[in-house]
Image: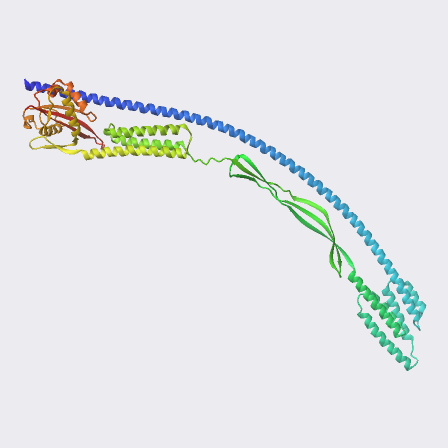
Length: 587
């Protein structure tokens, strides 16, 4: 009867265990579904916020585009007005330049005509004076020639005088006189030797005098006249007088030539450059430190002068006058305009909010990868704390990224530093928990039969076991506290490992508990990994048989073991199943 009841209790416990497992799985599914819905809700909210931001950005861009278009329109109108004013100014300047040019040309033409008329009059006067002078010289030469012929002997004087009166030049007179002298010499005969000697001496004297005459300068036209006078002179005194007159005339003409002034008129073109002017102004639409330059150019004007020089052998070339006769603008001077910006420059560096959004997505991917690979630790206290920190930092970064189109570099760096720090902290926390689990989990051998063993992997929660005993003694209330027995603690650990293979009150090898120690009482439970000592004790309380064992006054000693069985899947992930054993002994 006792064995039948024991089997019924075992079946009931198995059913309870299955129900507990189903409830736990359902709880996990509900939690997962809740998390999925929350994630979907967050995603929808994020998308809605992004859509709102995009719409706001589009509105702002449209407004900016409208303002920009208005500004461009104003600028275009201003530029058009300025261009029209410049065109008008150029046309007026061109008109004035043409009028000035026309006036200058008319004045120059008038002046040139007046000067030409004056010059013609002066030349006519000069020619008349020269003609009168030549006529006077010819008159004097005829008188001298007539006197010379009258002094000759043995010639037809009337014939020569007639020729002299009809002569038209001094040269022609000289030739007539020379011919008369020659004829006179040919027709004259010497009477005696003494006279002949005198004539020879006079001839030699004449020849020397003629030689002197020929060496004189600047009297080429008068030389023959002087020579004719010498040839008819009857005494050396008269010859000397002729030579003296010739020398004086040569000296006078040489002096006149040296002092004679020739007027030379030249034209000279002078290029005058009007330096470009620079005008500086300011604009509050242009950033401080920047400039807009409208280049200008120098003005170029060509001025034509009439320059008059007097040239003489004595004084050389002497400037008499310099008169402007023409002025032509070749290139108008344009002012160089420099516009300096006065608009204060914002030196703040900005980063697009999309950079922070991308960083958030990258961190989310990293966190999701780590979490999905280590789901068994998502309820670990350290992991929960690190996850909460990440969620807070991540939400703050998301709010910042969605609040504006551009972030200051300082805002971006601060958000990035915090987000990367929270991400690394969560990753390292998971790594730490996994490492601790790997270090904590050991191979545990379970005896399956007399000849066969199996090896499981997990670890014992000794502190939780002691906590469980403390809670158990508190629950026993007025009953005497159960004494912790080291051997029972050892047996409880053996049984906690064994029930992972066979969840019954018999051993895996089919033997009874008495093979461990006689007169033992036992409670066993299997829960999920996150169920602690208090929850397991509550589970035992809900079972009449388990509760009876815990409160039985006959029991004086106790041993408790909590074993976390590591259950691995094919992807390298694992989770824990918790197996709790209470063993009691009455002595």
